[in-house]
Amino acid sequence: MQKKILSGVLCCLSLITVLQSHAQSKEQCINMLNEKAKEIIGQIKIVNSNRFVVDDAYFTMKNDEVTIFFKSGKDEYYYYFSPQHIDEVEDGNVNASSPIGIIKIVLEDELGRREADLKKSTATPYYNDIVYFNYLKKDPKNFEQIQKLLLKLKELTTELPTKNSVQHLLD
Image (tube, rainbow, N blue to C red; front, side, top):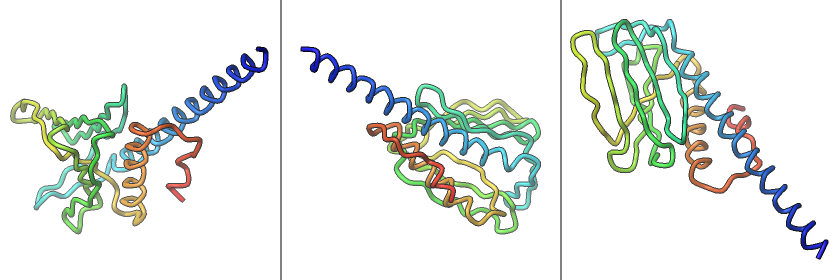
């Protein structure tokens, strides 16, 4: 009887350790993606012939919903989605001279939401199957690192937890 109780306690402790590790790995992914988002602050984004200075940007996640924020001047953009719905992560192919690139996060169905507050008007939220992540193109490894982190975040929100760290994704 004592062996069964001890076995049950050890099993529970093992599960708690794995779940804590899973939460830490998820938190590491979010922190790294937030660092990548913040790298563009103060940089100039070129869209067509227009130039915008990025005032603020961040990447957060609460209750398995990601928020990507981007601000330039009075224009603010919010993208919301659940990482478990990521289908693909692609290069958005922006102006070659822009130091800021765009990553297209393609989602299953229209499960991404964009809200924008623009100088000229307040736009209504809409749903789409693509959300965007702005990143610094100067570092040639950035696209691949962000792509791997996003896909790892998808894995961490849809599969059983593992003890693996995500730090190796940036090496």
